[in-house]
Amino acid sequence: MTNLKYVAVLSSFALLSSICTLAADNNKHSVTFPEPLQLGSTELKAGSYKVEWQGSGPAVQVTFLQSGNTVATVPATLQTNDKQVTQDGVVIDTTSANRKTLKEIDFAHQKEALVFAQQAR
Image (cartoon, rainbow, N blue to C red; front, side, top):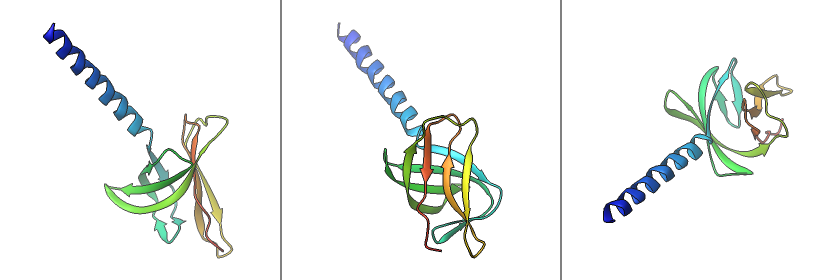
């Protein structure tokens, strides 16, 4: 009987840790920018980034990592869209100074989007 309890506790622990791992993966995505973009006071160079955020929304802290290094950490709004998009989408705004700023990231096959506050032009 004691062995049965031990196996039950271990099984429960294994199930919970796999669920936690899956939940943590929902706050991480990869995105590629084909051109440099301004995000707050940081310029994100063209290339691939891992995007991670802390919190369940709507206000979250977003970290952009490239090659394992943190490039920027900025506040954003985690927004739920009505429909899932079939591919990643990046919404860019061009300022009067002809600078391209990151406004939003929509994630493929998710209803989530990260919306970034716009700086004064």
